[in-house]
Image (cartoon, helix red, strand yellow):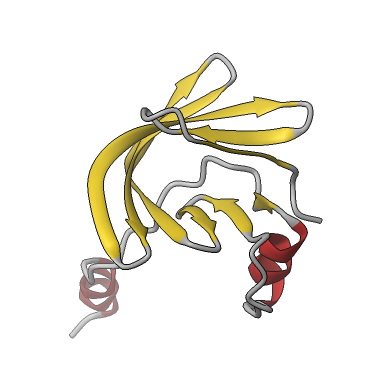
Length: 119
């Protein structure tokens, strides 16, 4: 095998695609930000975390699906939520940025946030 064919073979190996980054980091409550940094949670009820993968509270987790669409002050994106063991229907959520951070709004009127940027 020549060096050129070895390089071409290596380039043809499939590499898993990484989800596109659209937020500039993690956002959330103090507990959510601690979890984002350490992977550890104390289990308190005041848990709120928003990142490129989804939004999580102490009782629910919503995984983002597909690519976000840019809006004037944030994004819209499809989300699949699991609340207390029950999987809900796919929904489009709106992620809006303000001076206080991001707020996630669901079509049923539920709002999470604003969530400041984790430090």
